[in-house]
Image (cartoon, rainbow, N blue to C red; front, side, top):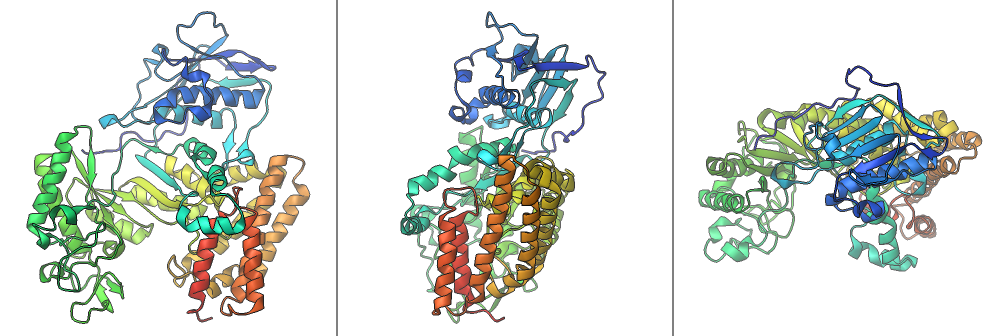
Length: 640
């Protein structure tokens, strides 16, 4: 299926003549409006928002969320009723979803319309997409209204992440607004509760029950924030490992379909088997399987061609596969998955496998397109096949290429030959900065905008570990950019600071500006990366002088913060993140001397501090601890 851009985001009100001056929803603490939902939803809207998290409940959830926030702002909660319910009287009605009164509001998937008519307000969104995919257009419309007209901000999960202005009277102007996000899939992976097997021993050592940790950071505690930031999709991009179990299914009859291993056999260790990408009979079989899947399920719009990633099996080194690897391709250094058949050791240098792998993808896509021209296939650009091909021309039009990264040069190069791109970065985790305070917000927003300008239709950001005190601005601005890639990033950051810090907004914006300078330096250092967390180099940027400046900004902010408990808590979160940076950089100073008492004392201080944060929305303690341990292991190889 071709997914041409459906609508362009419209961020300003449409130029329709105003019918009335204002609609009053609440007057002096008394409700003047009733919320109306479609017939058949009465029982659902009697539930709480926490009970309506299923995607199929998005319209009743929209009504309940709107009622809840009207109450939080004004102190009064309007009645929720169905269209034909008797005995419900009010000066104004707020029609939510596919009510009969909203029938003239035609919407596309994920699009919403907010419109006033007379004394009534109408909010309707596109809540389904081709293939039966559930969307949340109506809910997104309610969240847009709650932010713009009510002034609510969701900065991060939890009590102090929500900013709600108080007004006893609520009036709204005439509105005629229509929006649909340009990006068709917007995902940020909520990874706070992951790696339970890895973290359970640490939690046990710290005396914290696993279930308490999961309850503090799991979907019930944090899922609402991701939803309110309007993450979602109107297409489902399926790009996971596509060949698990193939050795068991095909290995006996067709061992030639599998990668030649260093021992001279093609025997695979399930379930991450690797294939012989140059085998035409294998191309035929994979195409046959995908075509059969599409025919069996008419609602299935796309399928994955992505190779199994990782595992013990090595890439095929048969002569036919190697002939597809151009000698002038970018070189891979000492990759353990690429074994020289002659020496049985990793090649010191070997060309990237992109031409080989994308020949494989292209040939399968040709075969599928002949039979199913309206279906799509997802193929990743990743690992040893991440850089653009050298000799391969334009790719088949039914391929969506999932590029793993944010490198603009690669994205631009891929856009020249790929019909559509899907950006799948791992850039939110603390692998480089070890969970220290940072500000990549402008970088992330600009990367999203650049990718959209170069054929990106979807994003899937991994490694959002829930470090809200040190990385929260990154998460917030990224989500805003995924909804609107042309947003004014600086204005968004200013609004965040104003909402978060109240009278201390100006000085805390200076705090974030300084973090941006530090973060830009870290990101630009070629010696720092996810697989080489260089402790000595990291200390150059998180220096004593830099941390002292951050502390000075926070001290000034605390002097003017006022009495608002939320403002105090958010400034204290920033202070605690800098305190963590002090402890970590002190530890990194002695990272090369692990046998010294000083090292033991300093790592104990870091762990004691992180232990106090495990059940809070600060610092992602277990993930930060894991990456810090990795950095300490690498420190033995470092040179100042």
